[in-house]
Image (cartoon, rainbow, N blue to C red; front, side, top):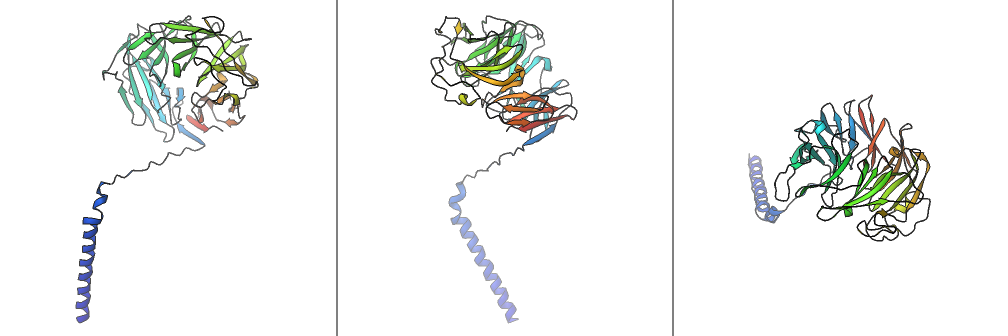
Length: 393
């Protein structure tokens, strides 16, 4: 009995001591830690070398985001966005039919700008769609007001965003089948302003974002122009690009301060020219363009300010163009230049490969080529209903 009593006493003493120690730490020692802010570290999402997700076999207009995390596609009467990591697709909740909607990926975030036209093509509203939350929010101007913009009974064909100035360049026509096309610039606060261009048969176009210049091609006459509005967007000044020895031009892309233009011969391109289109004289290329596979030596890039005098006359833009010779003539649609990295590729759909012109590295892909993100080539196997993303080499 005496041993049992002693054991019980020591158990009680132990409990009292432990309780006192815990009370002390809780009351005094950890008091200063009450205001500590903790951060939860977000583990980066891992992407395999090749990933594939299931989408409908009838998917069309497949376009990846610049990061490659998402892609949108048209199927049936809806526009969907698929997460390339999870495979989950969500339909964008439109208030109009897909024929009256126009979408474009932001180059700086995984979001879509959505323009929705009314049934009579008289006006439209602008929204931003966020794939991560499946939310669509109507944009507001600087006064925090939702706006309706009037387009004068036109169909919107496409748009491109300048994330530096927030201007949106809208290509429109009286109907989607019309060969007469024109441009307007949209500012969320100050509305739409038309651009006065010398041609109506506008084909491909790109934005030189630093100076809000529109570079575009006449797809019938095979010419390329640069246009820029004044500060108030009331007047538009235009210059035609001229390159010695080139009669038929094909606009390929704009990356950084450089425009890339192909020499068309029998509908194919074997030589690509590039030069700075920034205002004023530019020093030797410091952005790595000399390593893009050029066969000629670099020289000082001299380019004219579009609002100033060019070296020939006020209507012509000339520069010291550098050239890149391709190993064989290719279809213009088989050339791709990343707008964010400047990497240049030749696409061979028959052999299922893309080749980096600079490094000569080849990336194989399955299915039909659909586009590129900054790091991946995106293809679609319609027979299997698989959208495939292959990491570029």
